[in-house]
Image (cartoon, rainbow, N blue to C red; front, side, top):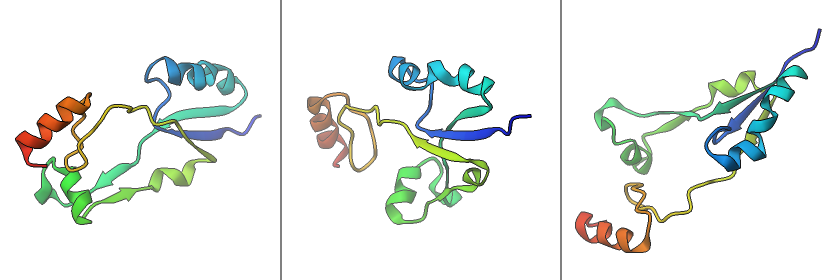
Length: 110
């Protein structure tokens, strides 16, 4: 009997061609060898008064990351960051281009 090794991949394993060629295409083969590969994103906890404004809770220091899932993991792998487009540093909005980022800054006041 093979002991299972649990690998959590922060950032996912199936989000496009890069993820597939970097790790996704090996998942089935690794499973036959007793390695369980799972996508993982930590849950964010913050007070309900923020509603869906999680970014505000982070900014105010009221949010915390729940890391309980790590207790069952043998390995944690950090996938490469894939977002290469400009985003607002205040609200996190993905603006896609520098021009849209500038327009967002003007219209939102960020």
